[in-house]
Every structure is written in C-alpha cells, then in structure tokens.
Length: 88
Image: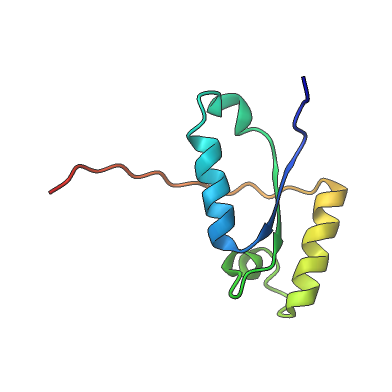
C-alpha cells in the first residue's frame, strides 16, 4: 500500500477548493486531512497566493516561492469552513 506524503495542486483557487472538499468528504477524512497540501498557483486571480506571498506581486515569483516551499516542506495552517443548510 502506498503512503501519501503530500498532495500537490497545480491550478487555481477553485481546483484547490475542490481538492480540499474531496478530502473532507472521504470516510477516512480524520486521517487523510493531516496530509499537507502543496499549492502551486496557476489560476488567473490566485487569491490564495496573494495571501501567502503578499510581499511579492509577481505571478512567476509566487509560483517559484510556492514550489520551493513544497520542496522545503514549509507549511502554513489554514482554516477550512464547512456549511450545511436545509432548503428554504
């Protein structure tokens, strides 16, 4: 059996959201959600990259910084919000 060390998402914020949602919907979510998720921002707006790398506005620099952070194992804890509601 393979052990997952890190999940790397290479796209935009929407793809990252979908991946995180998928992890949270797994039956083994408690174990699987402890795996770090690396994010290389390639989306148009990449709002998260501006949050993580605000001091540099250059998109290429954000991609480079994100890649090096993944390689170095640097993590930043982020909160995830889950909402459920009923119709009407």
